[in-house]
Image (cartoon, rainbow over all chains, first blue to last red; front, side, top):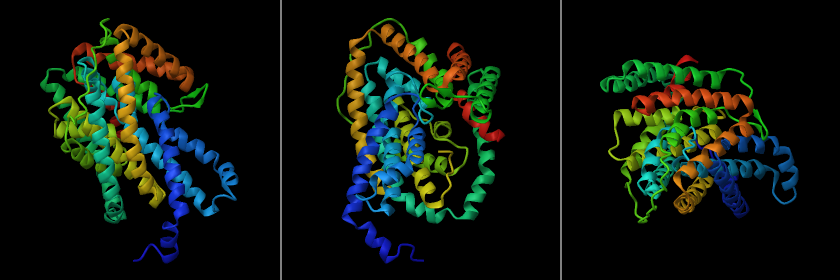
Length: 319
Length: 91
């Protein structure tokens, strides 16, 4: 079946459209930098603002930009902002211990590297993981849409809960081996109840800047603040060194692609859960490799989810 | 065109991550760790009510209590991923 007709093909080659997409992507990148660096501002907030102000944008751009290009401009801003956000959000995670939903479990290894003067190795590992993840996700986005027929997606929906139950069992089993069975079950259930309340109960989350996401205080309290409070030894941070070399290679990034593809397609498996599964099944030997895997998973999930959303009109991983 | 935007975003993201990492590295070496941690904790304590209101502070306090258990018991932090796995299992 020929999906792209001649008119669409001609439009895709329009220099004006290519220029508009490039400019929108740069603008989106700046927005992504802001949302990635400031803890608590999710890139979905930006998407909501753009959607709310869509009629105003259409009026503003009419006359200079053909009307049919306005949705492409808005989508390019959102896509670029989401991708840049998924890269940059590791910086606050490493340096101030304030994680995003994608990198919550990488706070501790990132902070450990910072305390040994190697914060930039954590940042470079994350950047390389995201770069590999994003490049592969771009290449496989279209073929994956063809493979994922309705039958396949229905099958994935059915087995999601089984996979999550198995993952929960593996996580608790890991702690049982260390002699922490009871506490592991208590913490798993307590954090689960908290997560359920945050995601499903109508808890007000209206801040001074409008409606925020309660995921931020929950993840900061669970993963970020305990690390910050524990590491307050009073000594100055060691001098940070940066040799400018790639600390991890491409293997952790590719491992992240496998888990990111799963996380991007299974509803309910977020990138953090995907990272947990990945580290449980295929443990990483160094903190840098772990961070690179988690970064790759986050970026692959972002790209695949948005491409899926744009083609099918329905998201699969809650983004 | 979405993939072109993703490719441009990817190149920008890589460069911006390295640059912001270098900036943050320079910044942390100039300040005392205890002072830096206090500033960050203060920043987080301020930004939570600013972005999520009163209930954000309550959630932060409850999450902190749960988040401290693995630290005090010397457990792995992956058990805290129950906050994302359990809601998916129950809904």
